[in-house]
Image 1 (cartoon, rainbow, N blue to C red):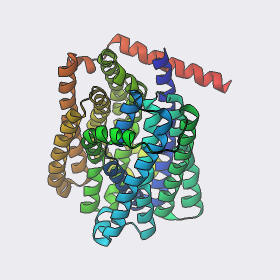
Image 2 (cartoon, helix red, strand yellow):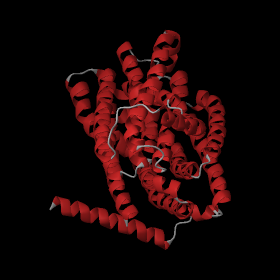
Image 3 (cartoon, rainbow, N blue to C red):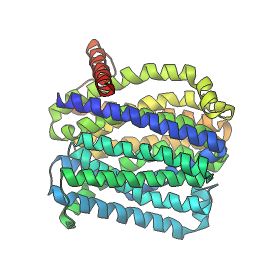
Image 4 (cartoon, rainbow, N blue to C red):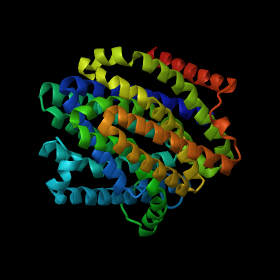
Length: 437
């Protein structure tokens, strides 16, 4: 019952997160148009990539070691914070020192202020993700959900103030996201202090353990981010900010759909580490729930995308329809891969996920270079869907080999899955009505 209750809480928080993030994205699109929207996306995407590059697999290592209760809980905060700020700060400083030759390629179209904010986001993103991993690893799901919602709750009014009222353009949008991320870090730190305690002492042995595991998980973590972001960088370099602005709407939809598997992964990840038998049952069940929810939702989204986007963001964004439709297979594949990566890493086999991710990324880059010059955003979407589908297939085969569970059991939805989803929706509805009353 604890898992079901936490799943409901996490799913509710994820749905609210999606709504708030979507509202901010639509607001930025309407206020800034395709070019400005593309600039904001590039600033955040570059920071996310470099934060993953700087992290050395730290978030995955934190979940594993905290879940195993390896080390004193009071030491976690100091070690995690120090490593995050140090690693992220080194990458940000190196990027700034590299000068215009590198910045003009990575942050094409952004002014100096927006570039500085993008670099400041690198250590902040790594710090925020690492602190969130502490709550996930310790199964503090309610606290994790609360801290997660702080960011979109702060970003929306800040965007209204800085972009709409003050007219600060793309710089104001990036600044609002930076301030919102800072608020999330403060709230998450408070939850960690209340739940686990904080002792401001740096334990080298604990830091070494985290880095040792993180380095093994690092290729998969980095390649996963690359596989979600690299097409944006290549599209920006080859086609400019406007193409990124159009394509980013589809990418944003894909990323928002990841809240569903992320909610399931968040709840079960710590338990996957503790019990292989639990993993053999929970991972297939979670995958089937994702298929049951997302497949019908994607069909509906395909039908409604063009008229809804025209109404919400303006007619200039209707051109995003074809890339969006071509991205839908990537959305489902990414959702399944997220759950399968968590399972394989919990079994102590991060190398398997790294291998699948690296091969998929290499395939995507090859297709991007071939298709983007000819098809633009649509070419990037095709490359993404094909590569992510390949990664998912590889992870399904690896899971089946290690667990003895046939791959079809992860995809074939049955009556019990429908009943479980109905019970979850009913529980959410009763909680919403009780709170409204």
